[in-house]
Image 1 (cartoon, rainbow, N blue to C red):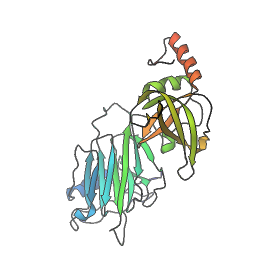
Image 2: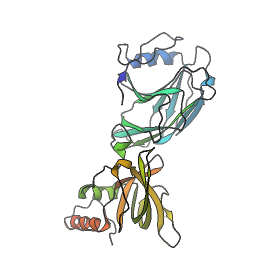
Image 3: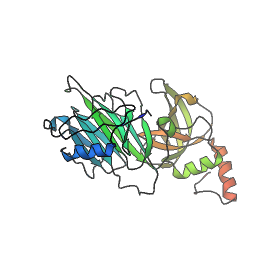
Image 4: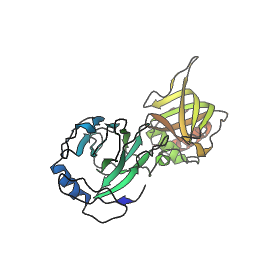
Length: 305
């Protein structure tokens, strides 16, 4: 994540100064108060997604749009970006006591604006205009912060659309997708037992093939599943002859290769994809589960036969 930037204030009707790195100036909250005093807002209360156009601005009057979203995931699409958006995420699916992580992923060919995290009067650049490589995701701790989307100067905005997906979760994460993916080390017994209770999907199966995508820096693990314990989305679908088939992704740097026998796969959904968390051999999982069961330490129950 790049360095913080402060925004210099100005009077209503005047273009605001662009974020500088670094640079003194009034707190961003003061600037927003000034801007909002003269800004027209497109409200999207209680919606998961928002789609709008910069062409709705009236000259010198409606330079800042306010957007309110109340879901844990959705999409923002801003066509013909001019001026700026303030995207306020106020999910009603989490309590205030949860530690939340917010991830954003630029849409394909997104262009025309920079995306910043606004928190306590500071802006931190998340996505620079045009910098949206394959699979790029930015994640950070979310504590009622907002997103500030500022259009960049363009000679022709007719072909510009800035857009991104967002996801909120109660899982802790670092500054990028790697923090949400499987670490390139085996999970400990405790991590495995917790994963089977808290993951979005838990399946028993064999690896049919592994394919690699160097551009996205990801590997796809294609599975033949013999038992489906849990899945939040329809990642694994019935296969001809019985069982299920599906695929999960992990980091290319982990060097995943096909292995014989059956494994227990557990992980989370992230922007519609199943991402690997833990994958012990099934006989190893049986051993650790029974050991924990004898000591009364299993966080949840499941069939291990």
